[in-house]
Length: 102
Image (cartoon, rainbow, N blue to C red; front, top):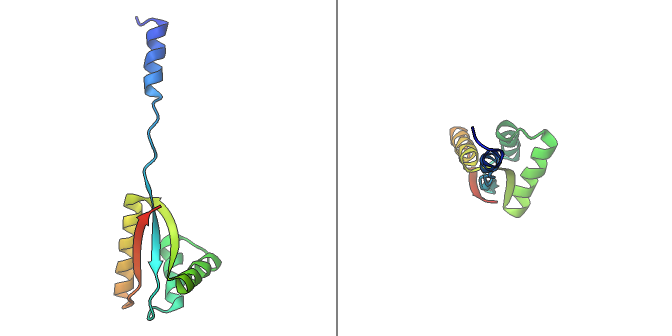
């Protein structure tokens, strides 16, 4: 049977902290061809933003050249980028979506 000191050492080892995964920003990039309403629709559909939030991000894309859609772990960010790019191409829009480290 382990002593109390051995038990405490075992419990301490189990409490070791794991660093959180790095986060990535998903960005929409401005272009001169994709309609603003389509961008708002994409933001609502893939990022669960309400109409007001989506409009705010769309205007940021329009005025600043890019806008942050959300911040996610790497795999989720990559999936969102692929979903948006695929949906834009299917809809025949050149909307670009990228990710960068947050």
